[in-house]
Amino acid sequence: MEPRVIPILLLQDESLVKTTRFGRFTYVGDPCNTCRIFNELEVDELLFLDIRATRQQQSPNFSLLRDIAGECFMPLGYGGGIQHLDHAKEIFDIGFEKISLNSALFRTPQLVDQIASYFGSQAVIASIDVKQLGSKKSVHSNSGQTNEYHDPVLWAREVEALGVGEILLTSIDREGTWQGLDLDLISQVTSAVSIPVIAHGGVGALQHIREGVRDAGASAVGLGNMVVFQKPGMGVLVHYPERSSLKALWQ
Image 1 (cartoon, rainbow, N blue to C red):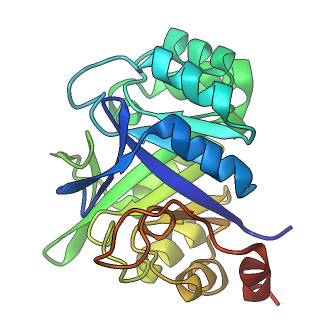
Image 2: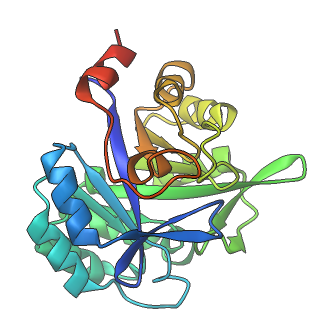
C-alpha cells in the first residue's frame, strides 16, 4: 500500500484555522464546507485537532463533530479536550474512527488502555508535539504551551508501551513554515518504535512527503499549509495533491 497523506485540520471554536509554529493563526474556513471539498477530492483520511479545547479546559464540541461526520465520507480522527472514556465513546458513536490524545497522555495515561480495550489500539493516536530548546528537543503539551521536559524518543517509547496504535509526530518549530519536515527527529522516533508514525510539521512540497517516508521512515505524512493555501504568502485554497503526483513519489 502507498503511504497515507493526511490533511491535518485545526479547529478553533467552530472554524478552521492554520497556525505557524503553534502561534499566529489564519482563518481558513468552515469545517463542513471544507469536508465537502475533500469528499470531491477523494481524500483517504482526515484528522481534526481542536487547538483550544484543552487549553481552555473545554470538552469536545460534539455538535460540531456531528456536523462534520455527517458531511465526510472518509475515515475521521479527532483530538482536543478528551478527558475521559465517555468523551471517547461519544466521539466514536458520532462516527469518528480514531482518537488523538496529547495532554491526556500526561494527566490520565490510563485513558489509553480504557479506549483501546473498547475500540482497539488502532483507534488511539498519541500526538507528540516537539520543540527545540537550546541543544535539546522537548515534548510539549497543551497546544504547545506546556513543556513536559520529556525526550521525544523516550516519550515515544513510553506511549507505545501504554498501548497506542499510532504516533502523530509534530515539529512545533517547523509547523506552518513550508520549510520541510524535521527528518532527524522523525528518523530517531521511527527507529525507536514499531508502531506507525505520521510525520507532521513543515511540509511545503511533494518532495518533503517523499523524504518523510523514504528517508526518515514515517508510515504517513500529515499536511497543513499545503492543503489549505495556494502557495506561501497566498490566499486560502482547499486542495489536495493529484493522485498521479503522489503515486509518482513511490515509483
